[in-house]
Amino acid sequence: GNSVTQMEGPVTLSEEAFLTINCTYTATGYPSLFWYVQYPGEGLQLLLKATKADDKGSNKGFEATYRKETTSFHLEKGSVQVSDSAVYFCALSDQITGNQFYFGTGTSLTVIP
Amino acid sequence: KAGVTQTPRYLIKTRGQQVTLSCSPISGHRSVSWYQQTPGQGLQFLFEYFSETQRNKGNFPGRFSGRQFSNSRSEMNVSTLELGDSALYLCASSPDRNSGNTIYFGEGSWLTVV
Image 1 (spheres, helix red, strand yellow):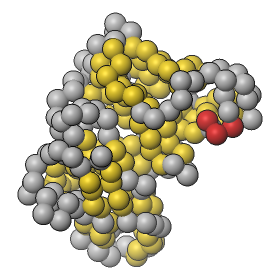
Image 2 (image 1 turned 30 degrees about the vertical axis):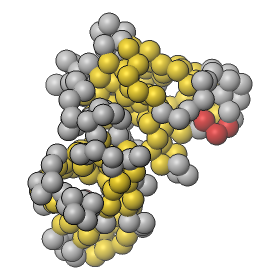
Image 3 (image 1 turned 90 degrees about the vertical axis):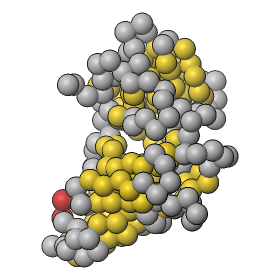
């Protein structure tokens, strides 16, 4: 079956530090991979996605590369800001289950000035 | 373009009651899916509707049900509420069911069961 394993949090970083949040997946087919972000009191927003192996998704300084050989989709940002404080979710969907997404448990990030 | 709209945003219900939550998808989106978010279980898929038909269903008891109308708006219903049903219920919409689609979330309905 499909599942996503995500790095446990919470993560606390100083402003301008480098961020990595690990995500690995198990899938029966050829999944699409996503990172969503949730700010306090809000729903989830798409941060970036990749739909096939070796694709790199990027947005707002964040990036992640779809690695089929290691079944990973790690999120990185070179220099975090206070405004990046949020909960980050790794997710996958596959061509069989369509819009049924499988989410990781979420990683809470706090960036301190 | 208006986003996904969920109503009500907050509600408190008593154990044993039922509740109906509403979701209006982004204009032109035909797929609507529902998720339950709790601190202990994270985000769990409830069901997906497309063209008024349920396409997928998650592992929830029959007390959880939904429907979709011809204008793509969707409702979910929870009957005989239990304390454990307290959660944030998120609706998401997508244009269709193609592989690799992004789903767009509303802000959610916070349900507290007392």
